Length: 334
Image 1: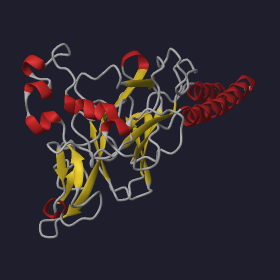
Image 2: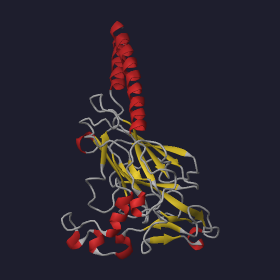
Image 3: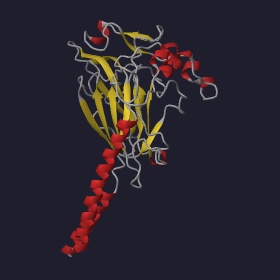
């Protein structure tokens, strides 16, 4: 009996090792901004909460957060944050979630804020993700898929396979749009709003509102008679965002060029204020929007780095297969 139990245990372990770790993801957030940011994290309705809903991320620091199966939600950077000495209330000039503390506790980002949005293991066994400027912009952001394994054991990152329909690739907005933001959309920092905190352009432009937030009309908000893709079209304001950041959402119905997919099981690197001096894909056009590069040439972290991510997961998967094969062999010998 003991021999049979050991056999079954080893077989079960082997099967677990052979299954790809495809139903969860790890988000690695890195802050390349020249100041501290406070990432906020919000889980979608009916989705299990993450291990944290907000924390401080110093310049040059990274942090990882694991997401459960089928998680959906969004992440963003809060800037110019401070705790009021008299009230103890924690507030931020941009991206504030209204909780009064470093933890957002279910609060979402007050616009304007650059958003990273995810739905893991969605339709067709794919992760769906995007960087959205629909609610405005506060910091540059880049999402890079790091590793993927399809349910059949194949896949990879950015390989154009059927599993990801050729849409498993980096996306984001690498351009600093705050200085170039149209005057009627621009948000200026004040000492009162930041509690005297130093950081992202204190005293200057710190965010760029969407036209919907600025003017509140159905035409800009894609509401009422404009609540469908046939009537809600890009505006001059949304085109400002789209020209500078062609892969980011610029208005509500900007799906075709702004939603990306990877096989479930992909992990993602999210970088605030990413360095843009390496990579092959020149996907940004800041000059066309009158925006000057802030960190070198405006390019995406593209093919080479994504291929590296794919090689890493392939190596990891090979190691798991070797271990599983050895375990099965041992089970047969029992």
